[in-house]
Length: 401
Image 1: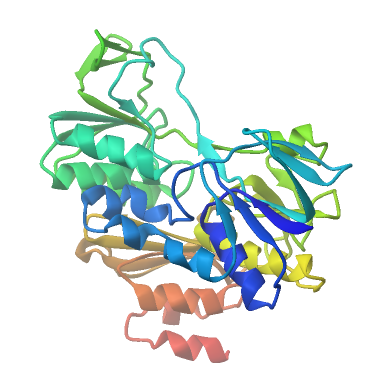
Image 2: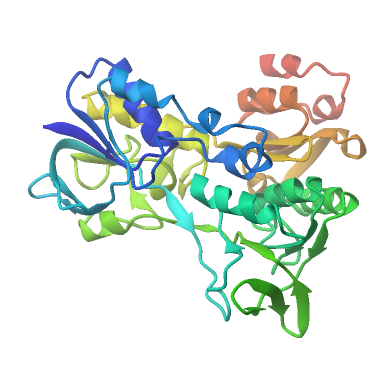
C-alpha cells in the first residue's frame, strides 16, 4: 500500500521530498484539488501579484521533480472521504486509494463575507494562483480598489496596488490595522507608512454591503458609500478540517495532533494550517498559519511516519513584505510584558524586542535581518536591556551570557 498525502501545498511538497530523502522507495501519492503542483503561497500577495516573480519560481520544485522521484502527483483531484476502517480515501472521480499511512495537509481557505451584494463580480479573495491571476486581470482596468480587512494579506496587496498607481482604500472593523496580530506601536507605524504612500485607511469601519449591476461599483459602510471596481476581502482563514471531522478524528480549531504530528488515529498525521499542535517551548497548543511551521511539521511527520521518533517544537516565525520593507517576526509580541526598541523607526530600520521576566519572547524586525536572526537564538534567554537597546552593542555578545 501507498503513503498518501491529501493536499498539494507547500507542506505537502516538502513532505514528498522528505520521504524520498529519507530513503522511502514505496508508492507515494499526492492528491491536490488545484491545477498546479505544490507552490509557495507567500509570494502570491507580493511578488507574484506585482508581476516580479514568474509562475515557475512560485513552485516549490519544478514539476519534473515529481516524475523523476517517482512521486504520483494527481492534480485537479479532490478527496471526498477518508475511510479509517478500510484505510482508504475516495476521490471526486470515484477512485478508492488504499493507504498504509496518510498525511492530511489540506491547509485552509478564506473566510467568506456573506452580505448583500457579495455575489457581484469584481469581489475577490486571495488564496490560490487562480485567485491572483483573476486579481491581476482586474487590476489592469481598475481605478478604485477597496480592501476589506487590515491584516497582513490586505496590506501586502494594498502596497502592490498603490505602487501600481491605483486609488486604494483599506477598511478595517477594528480600532487599528493589524490589531489581532501586533502591538499598537507597530499598528501605528504601518498606518503611517501606508498613508504616507497614498493609501486611505478607515478603521472602526464595518462593511454592510456591495452595490452594482453585474460588477461591483460601490462598497457600503452604513451610510457611507465608497467607489470600487475591484474589491479584495481579507478577513481571515478557516482550517480545512471537514474530511478529518467526518472521518472521526479529534478536532478543535484544527485537526488535533500530538508533538509527533500524529492525529487520534495512529495511521494518520496532519501538518500545516489545518493542524492544532502542542508546543512545549510556548507551553500551549496552537494552530499556526505559517510556512515555516508547515515545512518543519512536514519533515517531522515524515520521519515519524517512517517509524522514527521526532518531536516538533519550534519557535514560530513569520514575515511580511510591504513596499520595500521586510518585516520579520519571531514569537508573539502579545507574550511580552515590556519592550525594547533598537534602531530608528523613522528611518524604517529597527527592531522591537519583547520581554517577559527579563527574557526575550518575541521580536518585530523591520529591515533588520541581523536582529531577526539573533532573536531566534536569544529566545527564552535573559538579556541586558541596556545592551539590547544600544545599537553599538554587538548582539552576538548577548548570546554568551
